[in-house]
Amino acid sequence: MTKQISLTGIKPTGTPHLGNYLGMIAPALSLVKTYQPIYFIADYHALTTLHDRDLLEQYTREIAATWLALGLNLEEVIFYRQSDVPEIFELTWILSCFTAKGLLNRAHAYKSVTDTNQSLGRNLDDGVNGGLYQYPVLMASDILLFDTDVVPVGYDQKQHIEIARDIATAFNVTYGDVLTIPEALIQESVSVISGLDGRKMSKSYNNTIPLFAEPKKLRKHVMRIVTDSKRPEDPKNPDECNVFGIYKHFANADDVVAMREQYQAGGVAYGDIKQELYELLNTRFTPSRERYNELMAKPQHVEQILEGGAEKARLIAHQKLNQIRSVLGVKVR
Ligand code: TRP
Image (cartoon, rainbow, N blue to C red):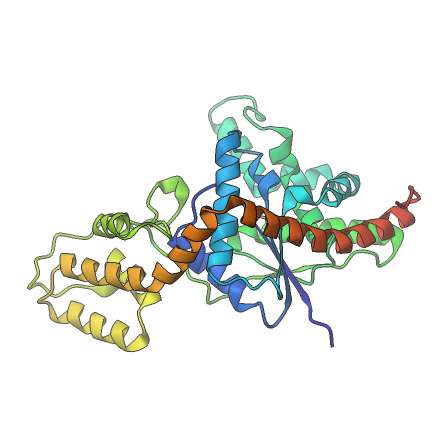
C-alpha cells in the first residue's frame, strides 16, 4: 500500500527555538516513517509580515539548516522552499476563485486585526495587506497541490485546514473528485513549552531559548528563566516552576521523577537546577549544533539541497496542476 501524504509548512519568521522543536519539528520528524512526508519552508507566507530581504534570506537558511541538522532524511522527505515551486502560486489564483470572501473575513489572523481596529475606532482594514487576507488561500494551495492526506500542525492552524477543506469541497462540487480533502493532524501529545518568563515560548514574547545557541549563550538564557524567590532549603512545587517545565521534556523518565522529588523535599537551589537543565540541553543539542554550524557555513550546499527538493516537488506539482487546468478548460502545459 502506498503511504499517505503528510505535508506541512514552516514559516521563516525567526531563529528556531526549543518551543519550535517540541511543538513542531520533533512531532514532524516522528511521522517520517509512517507517511510520505512533504515538508517545506513557507517563505512567501512570511512575506505577509517580513519585509526585510536579509532577514528573510537568513531565517530561510536557518530553518533549512535546522531541519537538516536534526536529522531530516532526504531519501525519505521531500524538502523544499515554497517560492521555488511556482505551480503553487498559479493554483492560489485558481483556488481564490472558489473561496467565499466571507470565509476569509472570518479567518483568525485577519479577524484579530480587524477586531483590534474596531475596538480602537480605526478603519477596519487599517494595516491589512492583501497577502494577510489571502494567506489561507495560499496555504490551501500548498496543501491541495500535493494531494495531501494529513497536515501535522499545532492547534492554532486548525482553522486554516478547515478553510482548505472548504475550498477543496467547493472546487469538487463543480469539477468532481479532483482535489483530496485534507485532515488536520493535531497530535495530542505535542508539547507546549513555557518560555523564560512562564508564558508560552514564542518569538513574539521574546522569551525563547534558541535551539543552537553556543554553550555560553545557552547557559545565559537558561539562567534567565524566571523563578519564584524560594530559598534552597524550601520545598518547591515543580509544576509551578518554569525550569522544571522545560526540564521534564528533555530529561529521561527516571531523572524527571528524581528531580520532582528534589523539588518537593527542598534542599536544592534554583541556580543548581538551572545548571542541570543547561547541561542537559547542551549535551542533547551539541551534535546537531555542530552539524547546523557546518551547514550554515556552506550556504551553497543548503541551496543545492533545497533546489533538489524543489525539483522533486515540481514533478508532482506539475502533474496535479495540469489535471486541474484540464478540468477548468485552460491550457495544459
Ligand atoms: N501557516 C503555517 C504557520 O504559520 C505555515 C504554513 C504555510 C503551513 N503553509 C502551510 C502549514 C501548509 C501547514 C501546511 O505555522
